[in-house]
Each structure stands twice: as C-alpha cells, then as structure tokens.
Image 1: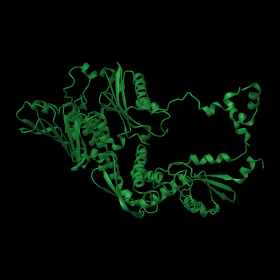
Image 2 (image 1 turned 90 degrees about the vertical axis):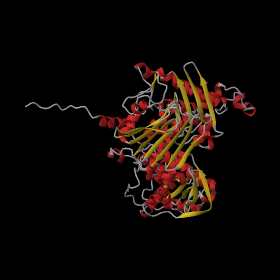
Image 3 (image 1 turned 180 degrees about the vertical axis):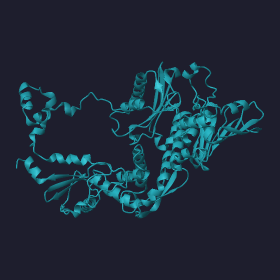
Image 4 (image 1 turned 120 degrees about the horizontal axis):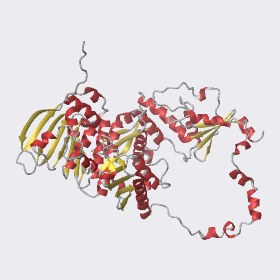
Length: 612
C-alpha cells in the first residue's frame, strides 16, 4: 500500500492569517502600520479614528498622493511594495513601511474598506476586502488621498480576539503608537478620535511645540535642546531638566531616521550622561533623533521594526552620551567644579600648616584612623552575637497578589507585650518601642505602607472606604496617556474612597478623597492633584512587573503614595495609633514589596555589645 503525500501548500488566506500574527498582534499594531503608510504617502494631514479601542473600527484618513486602481488592488497582495526593487534597496531604506506585509496582514484578519484617489485622476477607487478576498471594487467620487478602514479585528480568528485586553488597556497601546508617529513628524497635522471623542489635535509646528502638545504644558520651560552634527551622524531633540525625572521610563523616546526604536544600549548612554544629577532609581525624559546613513544599520531585525542593529554601536553610544552631556553643560544644568577654595577654608590649620611626620604618626595610631582603614572590622563585635537575625526580614518572599493570605497572628494578640504609651521618635523617621526583652525599631513609612495596603485590600474586597466630599472640587488636567490610564483605574479607585469624574478629554474633577487618609484633602487641591499624579507614576513603575494584576498594582501604588513619609514629625497619639495598627495587621513585619517594617533588638544582645 502506497501512503499518500502529506505535505501541502497552505491556502493563501490561511498563510496570510499566520503572517498577520507577526505583524498585527493587537489593534495598536494596525494603527502603527496605517499611520506609517499615510506618512510615506506624503500626507501633511492625517486623521485616526477608532471605536471600541480598535476592535470595532480603525480608520486612517490622509491627504497624501493616493493610489491608482491597480496599485490599490495590488497593495493587499503579500510582499507588494513600492519601496524595494532590488536586494540593495533593502539596505538603503528611508521610508517607514517597506515590507509589503501590513495591508495583506490586515486584510487577513479584518473587514477592510479602502478609498483612494490621485490628484490627476477624475475618480477614485473603492475596494472592500474580507478574509483576504476582494468582495467589491468600483469607482467612486473621493478627495485626493486615501482612507482605509478596518472593522471587526480578528473576526475570523476568535481565539486571537479572546487574547485582547480590556478596551482601556488596548486604547493605551494605541495612544503609545500614535504618539510615536506624531512625535516624529511635527510638520504633519495629526488628530485622534476615540468613540467620537477627540483625544489629540496636533497642529503643525516645531519639535518643541509637538512635545509640549503631547507630554503636557509642564515641560514648556523644562526642555533642554540637544543638537550635534558630525560627518557620521546627526543627533537632535530634547532632554528634560533633572527635576523632571520620574520613577518610570514613560517619557523616553529614541528615533533613528524618524523611526521609533527600543534600545537599552542607547538608553544606558543617556543615563550615563545624567549620572549624579538624578536619583539612581529615577529616569530622565528624552526625545532624541539620530540621523545616519541607512547602510550603517539594519532595520529588518524584527517584524515591528522597533529593534535595529547598528554597524558600529560603540560609536553611536559615544555620540549620544557626549551630545546629551554637552547639552546639559551648555545650559548650565551640570554642576561645575569650583577650583577656588573659600577664604574661610583656606585659613584653616589643616590647609595652612604642614603635615609633619610627628602629626602623621599620631593620626595613624588613633582609633578613628584604624576603624576606617582596617579591613574586616566585624571581629571587634563578639562573634557569638545573634544580631545577624535581622537580615531574615529582607529574605521574606514578596506577596504576589492581594489574595495571598499568610497565617501570621497579630503580635498584639501574642505574649509579646509592647509599651505603646512612651514611644520615642528618632530622626522623624523611626519609632522606638520598648518590650520586655528589648526593643523594636519601627520604620514609620514602611509600617504605614503595610497598614494602608491591608486597608485598601479589604476595601476592594467589598468594604469600600468612605469618601470625604471636597468643599471645592479640584480639576486636574493630565497628559493624554495618563488620562487614558486613570480612566481605566477609576472604578477601583471609587472603592478606595476617591470620587473622580471625567470632565472633557484629559480633565478630571476630584469630587472627594478617602475620609480616613490625611494629606490629600486637608492640604488643598494642589496636594490632591499631586497625590493622584504621583500615584499614576508609581503605578506605571509597577506596570513592568507582569506578575501583578491591575488591582494589585493600584493597591501598592496608593499605599506607597499615601504613606506618611520618613522625616515627618508625629505626635505621641499618632505614633501610638500607627504602632497598634501595624501589629494588628495580618503580615506586620514587611511591606507588600518585601521591605521590613521593624527590626527587633534583644536586651541580652545589647548587653553583650557592652561587655556585660
């Protein structure tokens, strides 16, 4: 018996669907491809319209050069492109799109309607495609340019559609892609409408104007221009002054030949340029453009074209770091070295009198000198000391989600007795609690984080926190990306005592804040707005950690933001309440992020330190 052959060619529509999985991963992927095509068409006005975060509709309308009837039909074929005629062209790409996969991929997973007309043609062309098949093609009256609408994304691949996130999450991805394209071309007018509401309206202008339009008016006076021209490459754009640094990487953009890229390597170059000007856990704002010969890089590394390879990465790294450093120095941002000592310092004995051998010998024999120069000083403390046990607090596993329940009885209900009537605050940051066997040293901010985290956890589980209505409701305007994010969080924030209402596209009204949390309403509208803005930054900081749910990230962000900060003086009553609330928590010894809330010191260990 002869077995039949089993290898077969895939039908075109299935092959296109498979290929589409690489190019069109979510609605934002299609938005990116369509916007780039509009830019390549020479348009100076581009409009994006989406419904249901792109699941129902994504439409891009441009006033570019349009297409002939034949070109419009050919554009939906796989690997159809006007950009490449020989293999050499692949290494001199200067346009945004070039593979000829985008429209074919979109047509494989959506219902597509295309209208296009060239200026020299009397009529335009209308094409309707579904599942890679042309359903209708006919001449129409149309303005010069192209309008392409894709409806019901993944209608024929339900499994892919089920993997899409919530509308709010998908809309955030669309906003990101829109910003990246609009930022590259400030000379082009862009608009973005979602469900009938205008999200962006970006007039043509300078690069700085476009950045402020997108990132917010708070950057108007806080941008430092970067401009370096060399024979090898040109670098231009802006970096934010050190005070604009945030806890998240959100406002960081690199473009190579006007194409947005992701590069940890070049990001490191910018971070080095800001060394010692910003905190180690902060990230500077930057929007930098690198122009160089296309033959010096490979943009065909990944289907999204966001990862590229430079022929000589080290040269590019050095240029980027140098350009940013030069810009910061030129605008008096970097600290300068003062080589002239103050007169009062110059008159000190340590400066004016010679350091004789006698003085050198005396200094080197002192205990202070020995303490700082001898290695391995731990042998001065009795080796049997058990003080090392405090490190165990740092080894506790982090809670991965709100539902984690650890059977840890509150210490106030055990045989450990705390004396909470005579508490002492040290450095406005620590609380000293005497016990029968020694003392606890409580970190007030970490302790408050734990208390708030558990309170918020109960609130979202069905015990909402009461809201204190604001006597004078404050309005808050956010950057568009932050506004989209806050809209996504509002339902959970209502459970936590925040009463926020959208008021226009990027504006919110703060009607009320949690009744039992001081700091927001008591200090006025400015404080309320700052608290929410900082919470959003903290939320984005957690967003890189995929193991956390949206709700968990919100709880941790609010606990961090609302906690009483180190350096805050507390009254005796406030310390007492804080300590008692901490030791009534389910997990009193660490924050949700694994930081210790207190350390224990035993009396017998203290005696040993003093030789008793």
